[in-house]
Image (cartoon, rainbow, N blue to C red):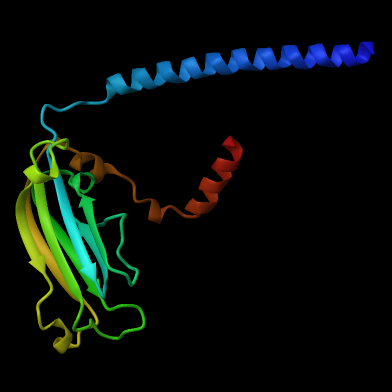
Length: 195
């Protein structure tokens, strides 16, 4: 019986100690987040560049400044999605959007009924409503795309962006991780060490 009470008190005090440590840890994390938030550079202007992609009966990939957008349209279904481009704009100046169009899976050429409609839009502030966006450019597939028997087609939009940041130096000095030998093995080993 004493053994049972001893185990009960040990468990109770262990749990209480753990909850105190967890609470202290949560407070420490919140304090750290607040400290890091204060270090983030904030800008007076917050422009937003958006690419509205509408596609049907084809597959589409979007690149901004030769960087593939993380959202892909490589399934065979129709889609209508806004793509936010600010993360792909390193600094103010000329920007290039490349839209690659491919036939549906199982088809050799882009079909007659393939449809791609792309609109580049701009908002003065990222919190502005969609109804305030300005259209900067509009491109679409040619009407006769099917008769051209093309396995691939490209649309390009060149535009001038004005952003309050300049990350170009960071990109110039960044290391190309694809050139690091055995990178996946090293990352997995470090993950397992930290886990």
